[in-house]
Image 1 (cartoon, helix red, strand yellow):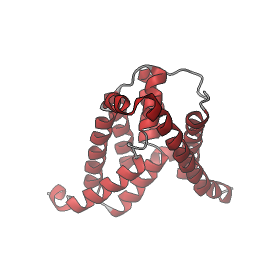
Image 2 (cartoon, one colour):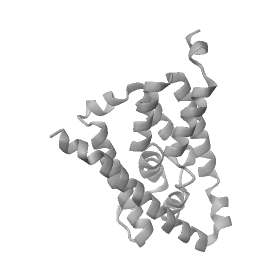
Image 3 (cartoon, helix red, strand yellow):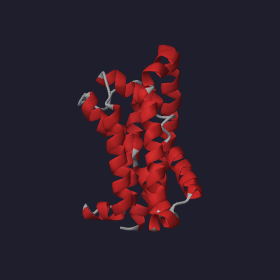
Image 4 (cartoon, helix red, strand yellow):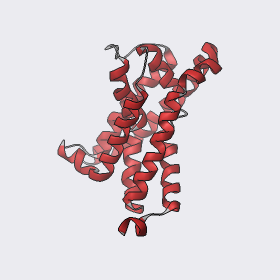
Length: 198
């Protein structure tokens, strides 16, 4: 009975739009293509399920997960921004900073599932949504976004054919700069809180 009273299409729509904007899977296409080129293959279902598990787990346990490791949201966001910053530099400068040469299996989890899909911004948004909406509506919104993510991941080969090497190279530079800006914003908005807490 509680499910029917808490269920709201309006909340689902609003939560879905917030998560879609934060995850920005369309804007991540150049990063996904770059990962696919460097690893040879990506496991779309694995990445989608892992990101789904991370987001729902964070919705249920939230800050308790981070508190277990003695980490606050600010520190989590700063760590995520550094990873995004490094990835942006790779895209813009054409350098290789991650030397471990991940396989499609490992790259599907890090950095694809985390922090690209279920990153610090997504986690923070989920906590914010939890304060406004019922959990069932947020779970449905997460499921909708994961379906969208999976669809985009499955379509990367077709997107790659349409864009061609030149188009991918241009997109990689453009979105690399955007990703760099996101990383800087995420870093600068959270770093003062770390120093204030000292």
